[in-house]
Amino acid sequence: MAEFTVIANRVQREFTNLRVKLRPIGRGYRQCLNGEPDALKGYAVKAVN
Image 1 (cartoon, rainbow, N blue to C red):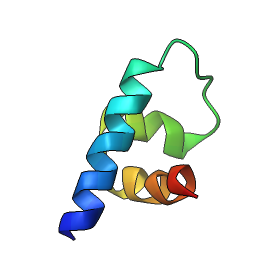
Image 2 (cartoon, rainbow, N blue to C red):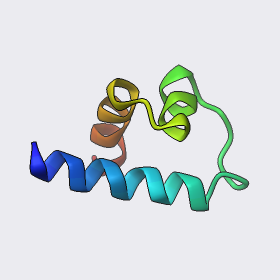
Image 3 (cartoon, rainbow, N blue to C red):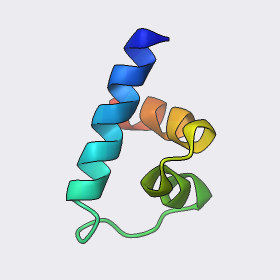
Image 4 (cartoon, rainbow, N blue to C red):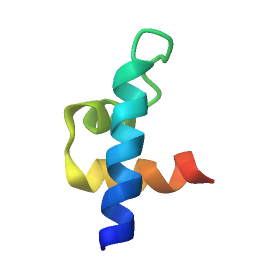
């Protein structure tokens, strides 16, 4: 889980930095910005891929 935590934290930081440039693309995106772990886990996989 440590590796996931690193990826999730990085994705959350990038989303926060790019919030103005990104548009809402579904519940997972919005919850990721809110830092909800379940949504962040699902979106971290998409972002890495």
